[in-house]
Image (cartoon, rainbow, N blue to C red; front, side):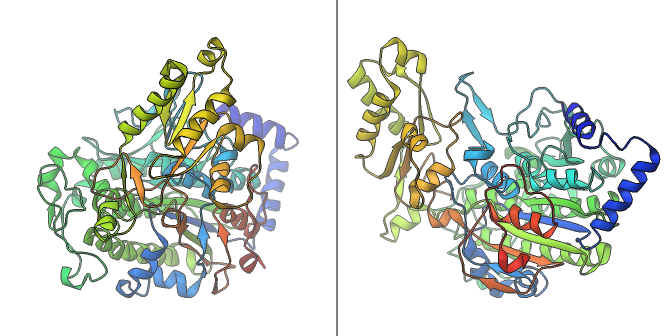
Length: 555
């Protein structure tokens, strides 16, 4: 599939470049036109990083990590996701495509497919094979991503001479940023493998340097005891280590330091336990450095791009919660990983030769049971009971709940054939269900797909719902819970997905070549990132881009 796509692109775009002479001339022209660009763009996405993690833990950071980016770069302090739902796959895709799920089509990590009536994982692709392990974890590609990414545009703009590499613990956090035309995307296959893998969508075999990394079993060095980096009593920005709001690893009664990963591995999916520890970030950083070195990224005037996603922060946040010692320790350690990466870029690519942006794919809610104990409006909606209540309402009104095909991601999908057979209009049934749901406890908003498709909402929560709604992939009724109310979770751990500020407000910092020092409190939306990087590189924006360049940076 990818080879055919590349052939068509090359044939249509560069048909006139037939001879060696012409190809040489084209290469020279590209070098001349890109001489003022950075040699390397480094995109860093920290999974589940709330904006206030940057400020809450600031005093604990060293001078060479987050502080170096903020003090030496340009910080956008009022950056928000402008759509719902705020999940990992839509977040990474929106950052790199410069648009929202309404356009790029990645509406969730998983979604219900109306045609097949099956669930689709965002990067599933049965037509490809795993490269690098014997598992099925490599049956992945970006085929569900409907628009180009800024990394795709860089490949096209440089006539495929600029390299693009994606690296993450998570498959979706590597694949979706790397895009359709990347040289490679790598992600971590845990369980009994403990290897970085890829997909035949990108490559037919792992490069030698990746094979050597895997074969060295260096991964075993990361399977160590996780204790706080500093005295736990100095972690004054988080609540007590022993509390009721954290989910322990399997095999433990309490979620308290220290954690012996080797002993815990057997009951926690083997090497996959690394994903929920700071050492998952370390292995990604170390692997990214090897990619920069061995792929020769940033070694000539033609811009390369490495997309790095630190995803362990998300696993840790889900398990231990926003206010945990574990989260604080993770960000103190991540600060050191960022510092090490920046110092490596200085030596490998050269100061002033690279450009970095750092942001997050979403934030997270404070554990609702913790907030409720503090007597704030927060809590839980039982997912199973909610689904039963929805089905009961339809059954009572229309005699059968078979009119409903699926309920997932806070959306209700009606069976169009069943509606037609019952001589019922989608609009009528959807409006009835909306009128019922919006009066239920802890539901803030309910809106039909018909309303979203036929109206324009310029701001507020309805605008965010509309920006996350894809007509072909989204449901017929969309439900928004009250702030700090979640479903599908017990009283332990944090999650995300809403359009409220705790999920939408994330850090955004640009640093390096052509980046002025400064900050702005002006509202910025996530699609502006791809537009800004495209403007800095003076190249075409992604084909679905709806963002705008951040003028304080590009001017």
